Image (tube, rainbow, N blue to C red; front, side, top):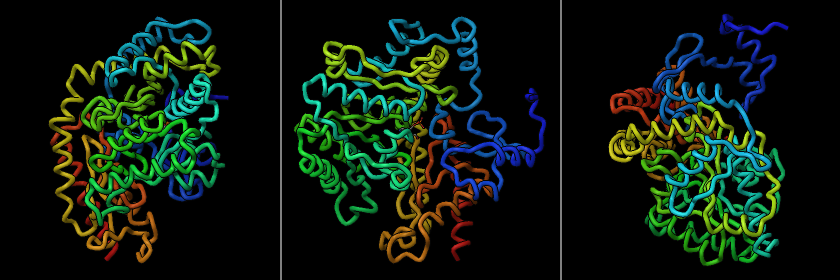
Length: 464
Ligand code: PLP
């Protein structure tokens, strides 16, 4: 066996080897092999570059995660220093180490009041598996082992482990899985599609009411928790209408249902505050987080647990038979600490809240007059442009009565953006998604928007 220390192959060689040996996540392999995979080679700031030398403005921050941008030496140095001193030790069986303790302390500091305890994992999916196991353990400790049902939302995404797939509300994922009866789903607060004949505030109450209906259907004493993203990300950047979260919290309190805010995308500045929970006034019992915690430089996730839950687990739980070899990995924790320091010391979170976030929203809203654009949604530096067939009738591509296949137009627009305009965006059905690095400047936002406008025009021309 020989292992290359220098990767001096051609793009075609890489594509051939990739097709022969690599199974990528969320990929149609036959389609990919026919097209040829893009080989990304380097990145700096908000830009990525591929093996053919094409520079692409990364409007998605990787997978919603490179919050401080690419190429930050400080993160490399933090990892190197920690690898040199203590590259690994576990946190099982009555051991700990300084980076994990310090990170738990810092997270307690920046999360909403009462979330003072951290359980570490490596991915968002693992964090949500931890959420399920912890919630069930909590209700056992409370003497109510029958409280097992966890309610979440259609098109919510909470990861792709077996439990996280159940927890999420992605129908195409459920088809390849088995949906357990412990997991129940309600509709998402998707005003443009489901409620545009009502005032957003009235629709917010109606959409939150679906939770109460489901709790009553399952039986309040059987419901363990409700989980949702403050803004539903992978489901199409569904921004909840005003009043939704307050009503959701009222309902959870009324029935003693634990509230879980999945901050894997919204956390670490994305919405202009440290957490989406700050932006929407949510006071969760548990808060899974990942991605922006290390800006994606190294895998790490956490579940922050409120005192009122943690005290029960500590007092009555005995040993919690759960954990991962890499729970609280010291190098990942050291990188997270440096990443949070950068977000804080450089005022990046504040800048998203008061400057680049509102500027991005205003720039995106300027596209509202384009013939393909039905709705623009944005908070902080996450946003979506909903492409529609008929603006007046709010008719989405793929709706009954539409002449286009669902997803086709979004993917067409995405292909134009990436290949013809040098802009990485994501298509969720026909919503075009933006989630750029939080260090993006106003000038780079202008550049991103002019590239996107060009992609929209090319798509409109294709449609005739
Ligand atoms: N939760 C949310 C809200 C996410 O968006 C994601 C990933 O996109 C996950 C959980 C799963 O995270 P991971 O891919 O790290 O397992």
